[in-house]
Image (tube, rainbow over all chains, first blue to last red; front, side, top):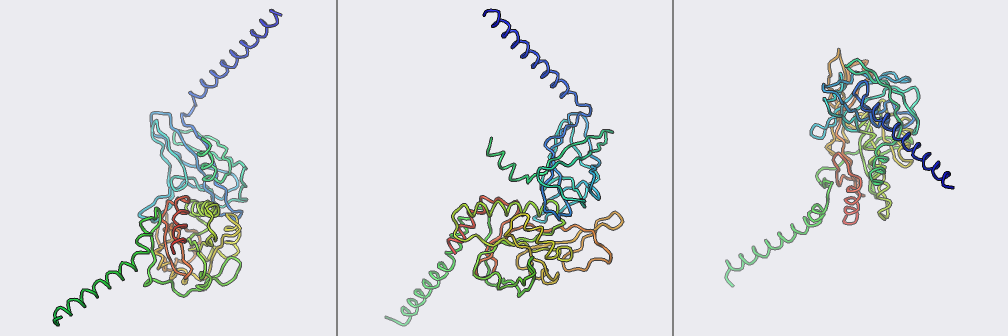
Length: 165
Length: 224
């Protein structure tokens, strides 16, 4: 009986330490991203089946000590992909094509509706809600990253999350 | 009573009458304006909509008569707009849901008029608009009529084209250079509430706050 309990405890200790060891390893790898640029929550705003353009948004964290520029984005199945910024100039909403999107050293930038965004132009087929769009991002530090952006309604979902917390 | 006293008395009575009258005519919208949080009362009997005849996304005429005897929520969009217009339409979806839940007896009709009828035909608008809500209505038609219609709203747009890497702006009403098919449109992004007389009553600037807008719209309809 005693032995059985002892074995169980030992087994539990072993599992726990294994878990924390793997967790540590995980954290370790997280804190040493090869590029120092981390993409959070990439998403494409769901759009009507005949939408000629789609907006792609995400949060980009730059954990390096120098400004990093997002130079371009690429996705299969689109005529072209451009970097854009929407600005509100005394009520006139202007959308301007950008050569690059800068992310400050040790800073982060939100690509979001009404602000910086990536424009997916001329989709072969407009992706449906819940589908994933694969995007390759190219930065001026010579790195590229592939992200999986989920298609969703966006604002409503964010509202939902906001209420949930 | 002397003649002078009589004249002074009459002048006094008339002045009271005038001030009471002006307070009364002002009262409605002055007290309403004070209660509104995110809207501007644009009601102006001297600034009426022109006579217009456009076409809705079911290919039926859309004219002044279609605005009568109901409340209408109007905005202006173009479907090649990846950011601002879908945001407006999503806000309209939220607004409609909130209005329905607020116990309002009749929800306004939700309408989007295109700045860009050349690309946004009724067929294009039908697929586009009904994706957001099956009852949203897209309006297309003659560019010249749309340009005249937007004036009393205070709405403005300009086409932005790239020629040899440089951005060139073409204000509304001006003709596009030949052969240019790729352009974006800079535009104001207000929503407008039209009253049952078929005229503009209030406007909502961007960014839109559907929850606050719904409260204002309910107040306006209840006090109209």
